[in-house]
Length: 94
Image 1 (cartoon, one colour):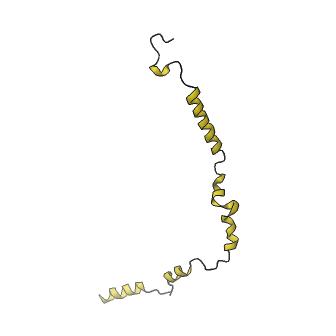
Image 2: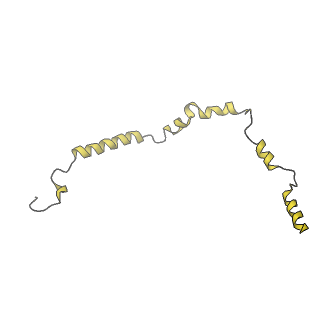
Image 3: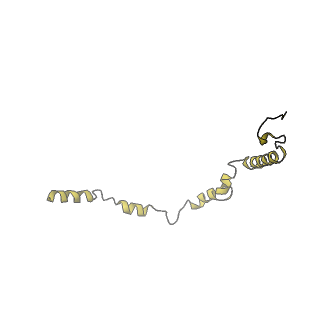
């Protein structure tokens, strides 16, 4: 019984002296980032998030308007005027 408790203690001790919790605390963002000014251009002006995705679908706006116009034209001007929707052909239709 004494051997297992000693074994558990040995597993908990860090033999190298490396403390992962201290490393994570020290590896955060630096208070004064020397590259911050050189990185700022990537997120402003022409390279902002809105401008990066503006040209993703270049013809989508024109295509949407053209399709809506065609659907409206078809609905109002290309209606079936000779009665095909009344029940089909029959009884001296032609």
